[in-house]
Length: 278
Image 1: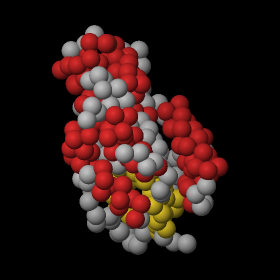
Image 2 (image 1 turned 90 degrees about the horizontal axis):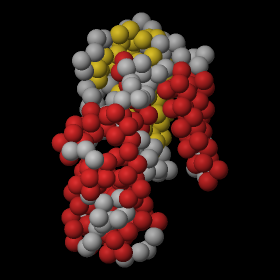
Image 3 (image 1 turned 45 degrees about the vertical axis):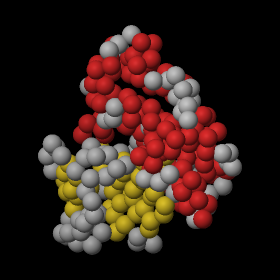
Image 4 (image 1 turned 90 degrees about the vertical axis):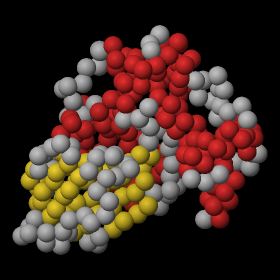
């Protein structure tokens, strides 16, 4: 099969795989869609060669055995060679931990890796892709989650980001902040103000390190935790909207519904109705 695309329905709050695909590109083929993605897409080049560039980075020639990533929110351009066009497969990721895991690797900084075909990272990436092609089932979904973390483990250990300073105070503070929010977002008194008081830093400094490390604000991260949890509850339960609002940290249904519509574009009621209709 020369071309393939599959949308993935399995969901995880922390690391979510949206789609997979592969393609044998025509001569000089380039992607004509939106070149700024709202997710992360890792490509592995199986055959051929081409050119890849991204914002604030020089264009590079890449060939079979190389990897490149389309980072979330970053303009990118990539084009197959005019004589030996590339064949590649890709996996699209989203989720609150993907950026954090990627930042531990030089792939996040350079946006490409050369000749990874003998690495454990590639072995895990290939196994993950093959597993995602199989029909969904509970054992398969568990394997997908396991392979996702295994792949990122090998990525950050075999291709570490040497500019990352794990021992830095900022790194420790953001890890504390993330842990606090993940553990407490279901409580109505979990606010950014209380978080800052808990870890003893200013709100402006917390905003700065969050934007630098996570590419979003602390408030948006907290909202994302609550909204993604709410979506799972709407999808997998018949609980009233008011009860779901309370379970994800909102004191009243009205405030929750406004926040949910701002996040998803639909009210909780319409979101639940549309999901079940499909």
